[in-house]
Amino acid sequence: MRHLLLLTAFLFITSLSVAQEPTAVKGVVYSTSTNDILESVNIVNLNQVIGTTTNSQGKFEIKATANDTLHFSFLGYKSIKVRVTNDWLKFGETKIEMTELALALEEVVVNQLRLTGYLEIDIQQVPVKTNYRYSISGLSTTGYEAGNTGAVNKVLGALFNPADFLYNMFGKKPNELQKLKQMKKDDEIRNLLASRFDREMLMVLLEVDRIDLDEIVSQCNYSREFIQTANDLQILDAINECYEEYKILSRSQRKSR
Image 1: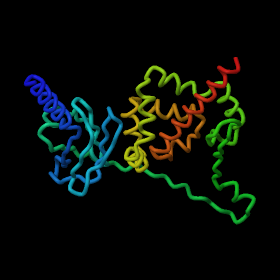
Image 2: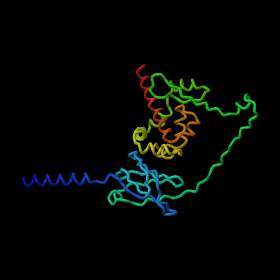
Image 3: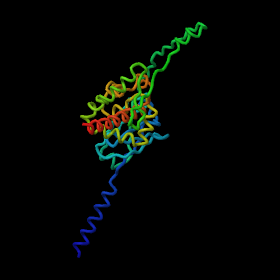
Image 4: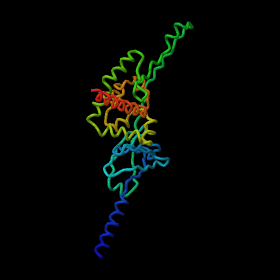
């Protein structure tokens, strides 16, 4: 009986210690040059694909385990990656410092329209957007975006060779496909991406460079204008949509054989 009581006590203490194992890290983000706190810094756990931002006091808390990597990014500052350690989990809040970057404004060229007063001539000078979306019968999604010229060929090309570049890109990286699903579900990640246009967070999460990322969206029949103007969330949704359509088409092709 005594041994049974000792065993029960041991198991209770063990389970209690496991339950109290820290599963989140806290910190404050500062600027190395001014030592000021940084508000609204984007923070993403690259392993668990969850995100958060610093509050008005520069503080943050995010779910993490030992050896997870946190990615910190903020406009005008150099992005950094920080590895979560057991000491950080155990002892609590830590100080994170980010280095400011020099900002350079790109030259903006404004083309002025030279109007003549004659409608037939002036209307030819007005730029016309030629982006259209073409739905594919049998798919529940909104279809493919394409330019006016050769739009039908793009849709037919997608039917016979759908998103091969996307499959080839991620076929060797199944973990990245899983990340796509997780990014789509996490509201905080989506909120962060909706305010960004630099593709940095997408590149880090998916482990691809900017050229490959743009090529993926391009091969999914999205226009150059969309790629240049879309925010990061729109790019993420475009990749997700493309891959889901690819799976539907691939499944249909296998059944028809």
